[in-house]
Image 1 (cartoon, rainbow, N blue to C red):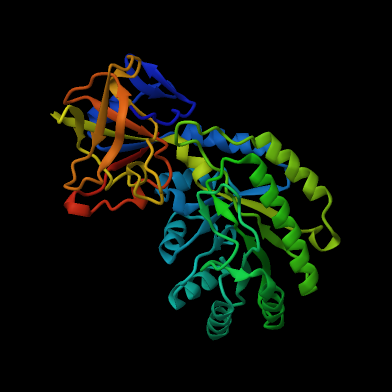
Image 2: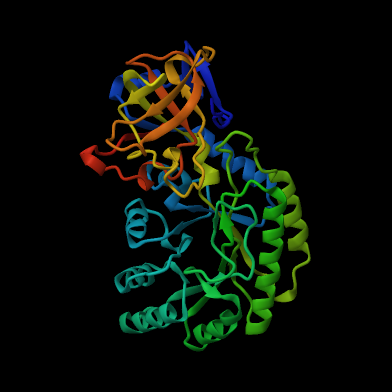
Amino acid sequence: MKPSGPIPPGFEEKDGWLAFGGQSVQRWVEEGGTPVFLYSSAMITRRVAELRAALPPEIAISYAVKANPHPDIIGLFNGLVDGFDIASGGELALLGNLGVDPARVSFAGPGKRDQELAAAISAGVTLNLESAAEAERALAIAAQIGIKARLAVRVNPDFELRGSGMKMGGGAKPFGVDAALVPALIRRILDAGAEWRGLHIFAGSQSLDTAAIIEAQNNTLNLADRIAHEAGAPLPHCNLGGGFGIPYFAGDTPIDLAAIGGALAANLAGLGALLAETRFTLELGRHLVGEAGVYLARIVDRKTSHGQTFLVTDGGLHHQLAASGNFGTVVRRNYPVAIANRYAQPAEETVTVVGCLCTPLDRLADQVALPRAEPGDVVAIFCAGAYGASASPAQFLGQGPAREVVI
């Protein structure tokens, strides 16, 4: 038997079924069928409130759209957070169609096409420049269309976020401008007459090491102060990145938000004059939505092979690639999992949960202890609110996407 991760707080049992917010998932399974992603607006709202309570009041919160771009999720966050971070022209168009104020949007990511730069400049979005060459293209496009570009610089810091799932800074990286080169680029932006918007410093993501997050934030503030002094220019804004992880696997524990907030407040109190008027933002995605989602798939077959029991579902990695262990995981481990319609029942057997695809990679849970389940029962995979539906190959083998419902 292999352990599964901890089921996030907020889920409960009602009439034998998995429920959250007092609502059983049975309704959505029976009304619309499976596979389906369910997202809890109450859990998301509560998570933002917890962050607001823990962080210094001057810290803004920005939602990273790539974590979950569902329109209803964006609509919910439009009233909860201070801004949005995007990584493509498609995400820019999505936010525009949903009525998000472009002045609240910043655009990061390497390889921005000229049409994306033009669309962002025309809309009034802040561009987080990833290179000196991208800066020159943005300035040229702005001059051509007669609009002053709002430009920030994404920094490739000299440090990384220890314990992070994906390291975005430190050493050779395709992201951002090496820290030593940033002051000169800032002066170029100022000399060109663009609207200077500050820095974006993102060291890493998905860390559950509270001390490492505090250390990275302190290093980020020191780096921002150094860059401002070397450039001889104050910083209107500084995106401190994110990195706040969520527990996915056995043994994982949540970060200490109160400790992070307290350390950040102390560090902000000691800032120099060039950062005295800087507006600081935390950019978070997974931490805000990841635990608020659950993926439900119905068992269509139960079979035994060489003494092992397999539960075959109508879902799979084409909807939940990360849970299958094929989205950046070096060693495959089990996400939190349950039988949704037998939620209160004790485990009786060890089984492997697989999807409907013709590949051995399509494994949603490996050798986990669950209540005995039969065809027609429903498997629940938790921590499905971030990097699930939009980060998975829904069209693989012609299977198509799962439904998504915000409750």
